[in-house]
Image 1 (tube, rainbow, N blue to C red):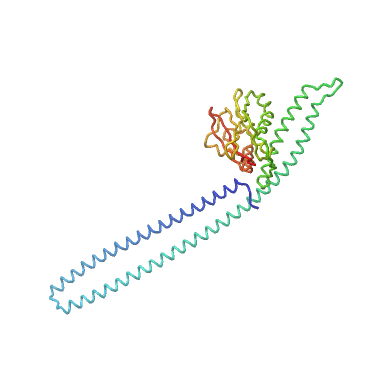
Image 2: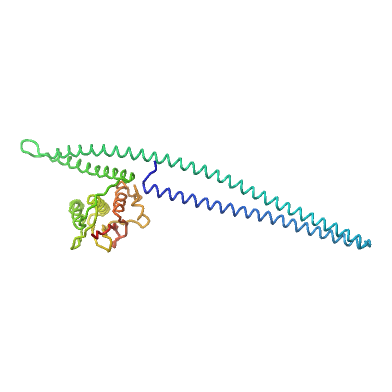
Length: 366
């Protein structure tokens, strides 16, 4: 079973590209080395031939001198010249034969090397395919298990939350609630709410990996949506002492969107902004109509995100080192939801050095 996770597919494409690039580099280096070895061998042979030619030339000059000294006749000189011509032709034939033999041997060597490389690469590719198949099976089994466990956990958490709410109900003759029990119930409810969000994120990841994320699109006012999000999160900001500001446009901005999913994105971004903003800081939520898009911007006065981490934070389980708060799924899920709407999401540095997360959605023209 092939994994449908975009991160896995992108990583595999990167691996394949790296493998092909490395093979091309190896082929070029082998060709270069073969050419260098052949050139070196040819140079050695050529030097040896030149030395042999020089020695032969000296020997012939000495023979000519000796023939002149003994008073050789013209007939004898012609005979010697004919013998030398025959020897030269034989030497040329021998050199041509040696050159052809060398060419054939080099061609055979190249074919053998290519065959070995092909066998090695076929074995590597086969092993890679098998490993990928095993990895896909493991991922599929993991995701199936994760989905089943998450559904079971959601049911258990619902039961716990219901029991916690019962702890807060008035009991006794005077209808009062023990303050200690009330605090315990509130802590349980907060804990189950956090766990429910985590389980929801896990279920979303399973749906995204399976390509089963479904959107219920309808034309809605973006201004009403951010107002709803601000009102829902304002108590958390007040509790921490962080200002939450928004400047909604005067007119409605209608977008075709899935209300719950985009509200989930805005809520996640507000939650992150609150998490990384110290008491006394400020978080702002703005929405602006820009041509064919509507841009949402959530900025904070926190420590900010370094440029080298601007992409990594949107990866699945992506977290900034030395900061292990959260589980690294929220921004990944937000990215998938925004892109499923035909939009984009990215991180910038805010004016005061904090973080600003932008995401765009297509503007509804009809």
